[in-house]
Image 1 (cartoon, helix red, strand yellow):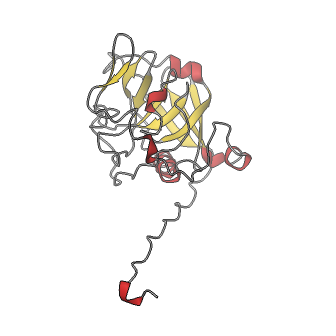
Image 2: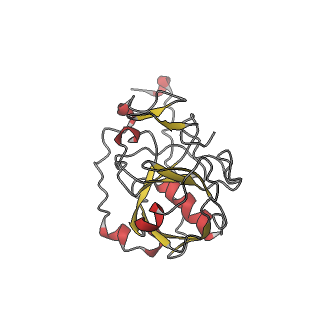
Image 3: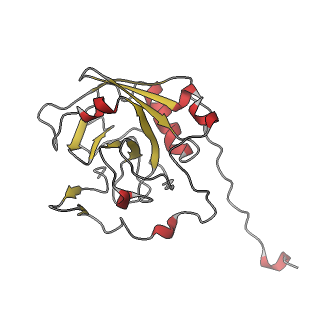
Length: 219
């Protein structure tokens, strides 16, 4: 299920999506009115301690991730909530492919688990999958991200706009590079603790659905 679109495999010359042809298709899903985003976060985002996620790993280092609530407010709030509650503490990176990505966030360590919160509606955005990017893993269903995330070792632009990017590593990428590889790893790297630098912000405001119009009342 939550194995990054069920199962991402590395072919001899390129990354292939074995479970679904969704990647590299239907790029028109992004709202055409959405402004282009870059990984240079606005000052008000970067200066908010609550948008800094710190992962202390058992390989002896700490990874700092700048979260982007301006790009994926509900997914970022989920991570902030789970991290502050200690959800990620003790969870392993269960799927680590050198040159591609490290995936974790599943309390079962199998790639099929998540939190008790409901799955999230996709918030695909225009932040590209560069080295150090953090995005939410999901099953084939687009609205199935929950708690699992992955960190990119190298760029994979064909994943853009098919997975919800939530931030990027701003310190400790060398620690990410030392995460033990494997599917699953023989000796998986564990998250000792995951915390944000400030309090959990208020939940994002829901966007109200437009009211139905009675055709008999139209002018």
